[in-house]
Image (tube, rainbow, N blue to C red; front, side):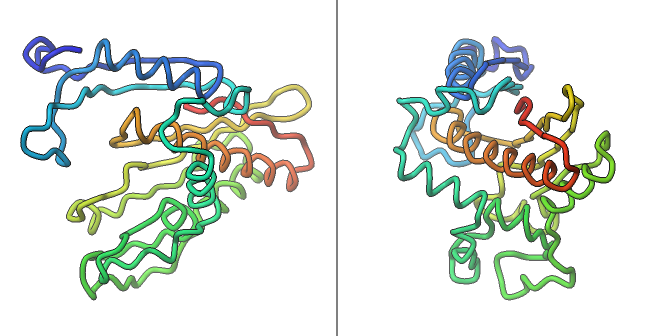
Length: 233
């Protein structure tokens, strides 16, 4: 770890590559522990030490390689499965109720029913825009144009999110299809503005890669060719 003074005002940029999710998680933790710079966060209480921060590109070559679950990730199998269903199936979308002091979003809602709004903290949260299923659009786009670079889904609402207490960490999913033998591989990039590498990264990646797998299955069914999961970045 380094201090901001030692870093010379430069945020470290690290690249980590692992074969599996647990492998990549361990390597990323060690890299940030060794080379991350000390920076406070907006969630700190008085007396909390600074966090270790860096811009980190983490590549998982085989997101469904075994072991897929790390035996020491924070939480347990029940919490992991609930979170997977929250992201992929939206089991907690009904918790979205900012006027009642509850959640302002879920990743599932932002990806499967994105709807821009002016203000998420008051009764003015109504939107003049229809919800957009961005995941469906990504699938359909890649089915029509397998080499497209436009298959992406976003979460950020510029009018509303910056003023909320807990804006989305996940910002964008971007999918690419590459030919592989007689079929394809679906590669997925996920961009996060912020993430707790120890507490959140593992469950985030476990859930998002399951979404990657389901997208690959839907594309395969529509184009009539096998589509496997490629890397997750």
